[in-house]
Amino acid sequence: MTSLLWKKFVGRLKVIFVLTLIFFIPNNLDAQAYQIKTIVIDAGHGGKDPGAIGRKAKEKDINLAVALLTGQYIEKYMPDVKVIYTRKTDEFIELHERANIANRNHADLFLSIHVNAVSNSRVTGASSWLLGVGKYQSNLELAKLENSVIEMEDNYEEVYQGFDPNKDESYIIFNFNSTKAYFEQSLNLAQEIQDQFKNRVGRRNYGIHQGPFLVLHRTTMPSVLIELGFITNSTEEKFLMSKEGQEFMASAIFRSVRTYKQQIDAKNKKTVILANQKEPENENSVIEDHGVTYKVQFLLSKTELAPDDPAFKNLVAVWKYKDGAFYKYTTGNSSDLSVIKEIQNNIKDRYPDAFIAAFKDGERISISEAKRLIKAKN
Ligand SMILES: [Zn+2]
Image (cartoon, rainbow, N blue to C red; front, side):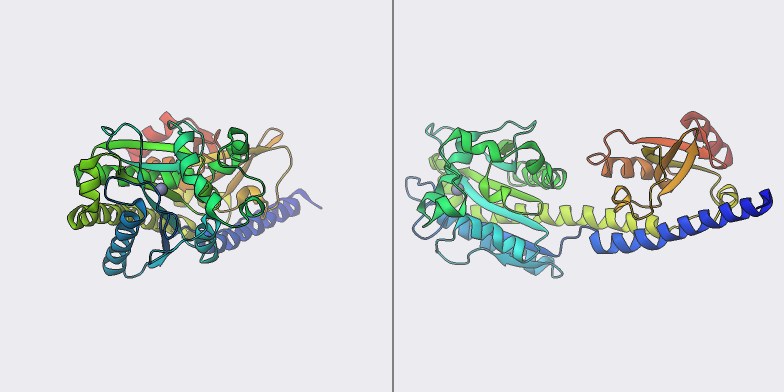
């Protein structure tokens, strides 16, 4: 083959490579983009399991009232979202079944509603709990308390494979990997919830925590367990028993879900735009169409990877360049640094070492040089 033919051949290959990526990535995105279509609301306890008991109230009744109200608000003001309840009456539902309801219905969000209890009656405040043993203050005692409801279930040793909610060593199943999934999304929602409780309803902020909750462990979507307050504090008990208190708490949860959904919708919109951005067919059009761009470099490989390599799954505008002995892979393509930062942020769980790189005419340049060139052009 002459060198000219060879060049043409390589050029063709590049076009095929890029086109394959264009077709395969947006499809993938369509199928996988996280949206809020179905929410499962779980009123904790019920039936023979009263949950925590106050002077007058039983936890199960407060949970149910707030869960139903929250669902009603979502149904009324977010008509495109489907609400599913784990229970709508005072009945006993096994813990694993609560998670199964969410998994079976492919829920996009799982909210478990509870009321807390401690021996010190002065303790007050509303809190949100995420699965795990990470950086947020963990509380094994509360998790043990909430998990111990499985002892009321027939057959629990078998269903939970020998898990004894009262034994510390059982909690080894909550390893790091199993608790990391959906953490970011769950945390975002928990932050909204706590913000609403504190700033809109004026509740004392008992904070965001993590714990090894079985019900959260078994769900396969972002999940938050809410403790509305302390039934062991008589003022808080009274508030949570009142119609007004229940409406306040439910509307706070509803508003946080609405904000959470708006954030995800906005992000998806941005992602779709990025995915639909036409990739250059060859490097020449990079120069003409894009000039200076930022990309997130996430992978380095000695061998060239196939376009359908799992490493590229769900990534937008994947591009590769050769640098010495290595193929370097980037995702995203924009002259807007904030867009690229968001992409970097979105993939940081998967690619913690990914960094932003700038390019001009397909060649790496420094970020400061890119900033200067973009500024000069505008
Ligand atoms: Zn509870």
